Amino acid sequence: MGEKEDVSCEVCKEKPVKVEVRQGLSDYWLKLLPLLKQQNIQSYCQLCLHDKVKYAITEYEFKYFEGKIKNHANDFASNTGQLVEGIDYYQEGRFFVFTSWYHLKRGYCCGSGCRHCPYTKKKNNT
Ligand SMILES: [Zn+2]
Image (tube, rainbow, N blue to C red):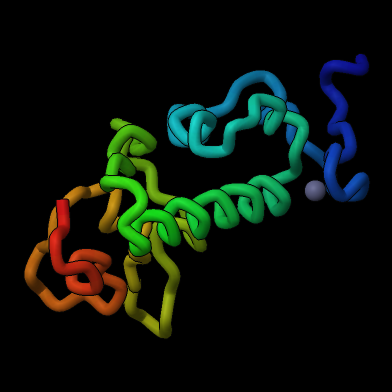
């Protein structure tokens, strides 16, 4: 019985962690594990997981824009093409706005003048 019940999130101790999450994360989240430097995210609820990922991405982008690291965000990109709202994009009315993280994972500038293009902020982009 216990295995089938939702358990509470380790972080907020409130919201449930879905059984599917505990049994196995999708490739999208597995690829992010090295960025999070943490392996126990299977005990996080969806909200805390998103927070954790966003924080790690902010840290990564900060280092990148400071020129401390070369962009290797593609290492954290899933081959499944899954995109997550709030991490890869957000909606503004009927438009989808891609985040700088999405562009960093793709690895190059598409030249369409995207609002969050990370490659125009830095001169020697890689
Ligand atoms: Zn939580």
